[in-house]
Length: 404
Image (cartoon, rainbow, N blue to C red; front, side, top):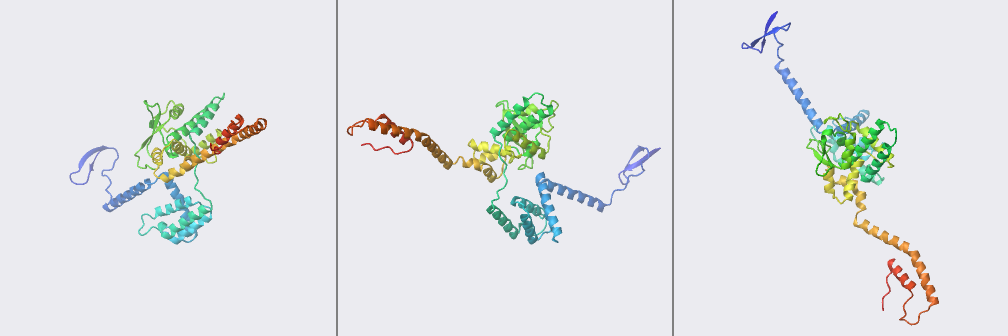
């Protein structure tokens, strides 16, 4: 049956042939009010999606945990979660503190509450002066109790070399399963690249084969960091890596690898577990080793090479000088003028301690020579043993005798 129906609405509609069982007329358009409602709802979803994208995934996860803690406490204690009352927030924070939560956790949880109140009219209860004062008091009390923020132990270049040596020893074993070989090489590549480019875990795990290139001039490599914690808009950064790290990547690249394939297709938890295991297998204490350890190790290596905080911030894409200063504070203390002076004093003390037995022997020889060959007159030369003993005493720091 040949059917014709209209496209459009009105007397000028165009007639098109259609074959089959289609209806003679299309469905009527939705009422204008309903169309506007649908459009407004779509706009609101886009706004919410845009706001959510302003936060890093890890930040959103931490905020969900913090808000859940506050909402659960508020429900259990008859308090309003939104909007929150400053007094209720103080009682909640005190409860968490007494429950063993650290000041850093409390600050994150409080930031989550502040985030949920950001679009509400009036003052933000999480930023009320009483709440701010309580947080300052908790931080001060925690410091008095000996609390220090957790910091990962560094994996410096010497540690990377230890892991590389252990990997080579394991690869030399006969009958090593192919899966074990691939894991050893992948772990070494993760640590070497993470150290050289000072990568965060999220940056390392986001690398794709298209992000790696080789410099023909220096024979080293480069990696492109498309976005990071401090670059949420994706401006990107290019970081150099050593020829050793570039070779480690070359050894793990599959023959069928595509440019868009991830280099390390593992989760953050697997990354953390494997980097601790690699350090432990190489004889490094794994207690303080985290996925941040290679990054901190590079910061300390740069500081030891003479780089200042500003240069280290650029290399590691840090935005806060205090963060870098905390990472390198132990290393910096070892290179102050006070540390250099104390090292000089220690060397002088070691030298004096080593010379003391010789000085005692020479003094004894001088006394024996004086008894056997007494000198006559003030113009006689002192025995050789006595002169040697005098020189040793001067070398130990004793003041030389004044010449007449």
